[in-house]
Length: 89
Image 1 (cartoon, rainbow, N blue to C red):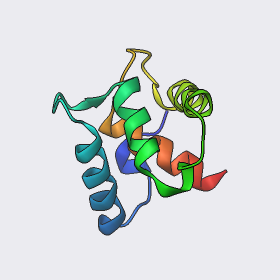
Image 2: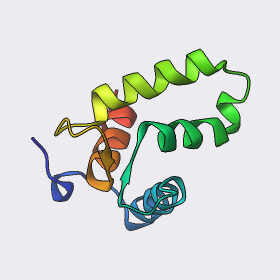
Image 3: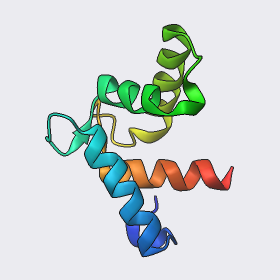
């Protein structure tokens, strides 16, 4: 299991991910819920024409990959790891 220090990202990319994470974390509890992730996805113009059902599928798939500890939310570390895995697929 990789730690954040094992993932090779630029400071700029990590800062960009942090800004996206903080913007999506609307209740400011330090983790993303399914609803917060759905809002983040809906805000992306790429997903603009997707149905609610498709968005829910994306959220479900994202949680399957990103919620590493299975606590029902995505921490910033899990978010970064998921972005890294997605980019390397």
